[in-house]
Length: 141
Image (cartoon, rainbow, N blue to C red; front, side, top):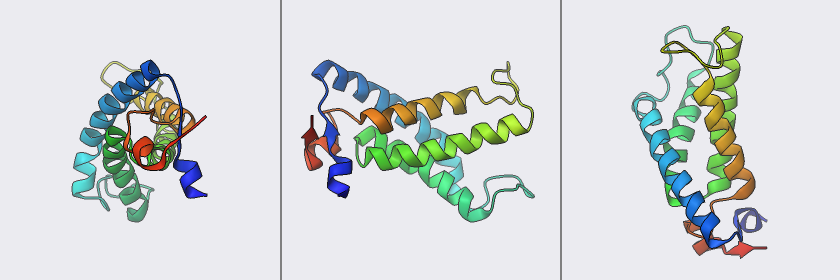
């Protein structure tokens, strides 16, 4: 059952190239975004933050590890799900603080919302043919 979940939807080669470019660029961005967090995974948020250390560690792992997984196209649905949950929480936390969608230089949830959208797209479409997932688990129509 897990193998069926991880099989890659067969998309045209041009779409696979586009998905590869998206995965690499956003994956690198996520690895940079999660790098500082993975250094102190249980305490990267300010003291008194309402998020327990174990959830902070899961967020750090989903950002850094998920970014690496996206670059490789490895376990893409699982990485996408982890990143989607992390970004949904980030959007909710920013919105509950009254942060706007977009702000010049101030707190905003624009980037978290964009990452959430990309993670949902990769979760639903998959990594494309040019991925470790396709090489290991094969493709489906």
